[in-house]
Amino acid sequence: AHWHATFDEIYLVLDGSLDLRLFDPATSGRQTVTLAANELCVIPRGTHHQVIAATPENRLCVITTPRFDPSDEVVSNAL
Image (cartoon, rainbow, N blue to C red; front, side, top):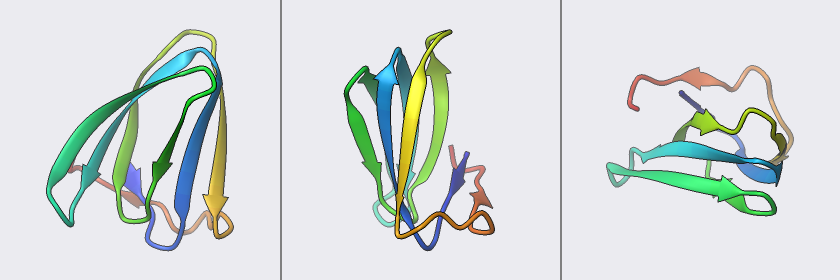
């Protein structure tokens, strides 16, 4: 699991499906989200997230805003 301090992520499933585990430290809220093809999840900055299951064949489009910063990936043990 990991989180980002400076950008939001959008996970858009193009094919297959996947399960995401999310943790919001601001509210201590935890949830699991299942995404099928053509569904998306907006992951706000600061939200800890992890893919916990996926179909054997899938395609995922990840969009970041603002731009992706490879140095901004903080490992999390909260999930």
